[in-house]
Length: 488
Image 1 (cartoon, helix red, strand yellow):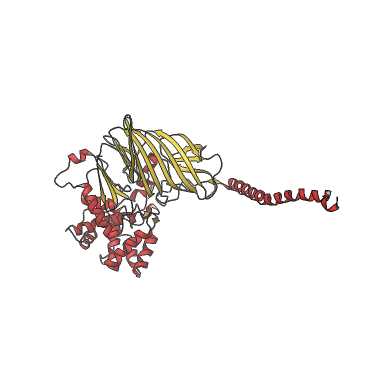
Image 2 (tube, rainbow, N blue to C red):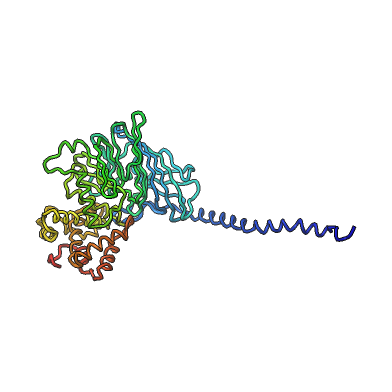
């Protein structure tokens, strides 16, 4: 036996110790990372605060909520017209913009039965139209999280700031949800300000024989027993005020307009009352879409259509996304107006309610151009009639600048519509037709499915035209009162 074949105690100890050192060396970064993660999570939890109960809109400061942005709403609704009862489950996927100890959802009326955040039960509190949700643990910054709210009750019809009816409105054979500016909070919880847009999936179960129409495309219709479920998908971003559900007895017509699927639901009572001046709504939708594509560029959504209901006393139509809502059979100009909103207001949505003139001016100006195209007055003549006060819709247009309604009560007043259209006409005259329509198409393309404001529009017009348009906007958009000359 030689000494080289023996292992000394010192050598054996060294071999046993080496793997431990390697293990500790490998484990140390993991321990440090876990420690840092726990420290960071603990810091975020300690620094977490409640999200703001409103976004501070200049006209509707209580609308919307701070601390997060919604990515998707999954709404499962069950409606019983007898008793006007609604059961709902809202699954809201959002991303936090700050560490959140609690956050708010806009919800008026209805009884909250349960709430959870990421599958864990959450506490709720109510104060007016604010539903405060407090999760079991704080939500870290820049985190995706899912809130589920189960609720039921009799949804409310409310009076808007301008005195009109909105919210959940009963009809003779069902109901409709209309949301401008705040009515959507009466039938589902959410972040109900135009600046927070999201995709929607809305499934509505109603008594067999009735139809439930909503935004986007019908993905599923299924009858079980005496109830039928209609599942609708709206994949493009949508502001909450543009969401709708209409339940009733509807005749449905489907077609294609180019690559766009078209779904028109009409209450038979409106078809029965049609007179010699009535229009073929599905055919008019196709015609108007084709014409407006030529002016404004590609249609911004995968589906289009209309809801023609029978709701005496409502006295307005609404540009609900992909399917404008009409309270009765519309004329051509109204279809033109509401479909133009699919580009202006729905795809390009105002950043605040003060920017609403960007919606209504384009929709109104589209009416002017349709009248000219149809052999009526020229846009120049319509402008003159508004300036002179001889047009039926010119009353009150000088009450305030279009981009500065004094309050929410005036957000839908005539300066936002008629004088807003006059602003566009003056810009068109200043830059010429070719540049004007190129500017409009670029505006729609650049802000597709987003939000924009008045300052951005002015800057865009000047950049696209290469002209200083300060005088035009100062006189027709910003100044108080009527300009001293139509040529100013």
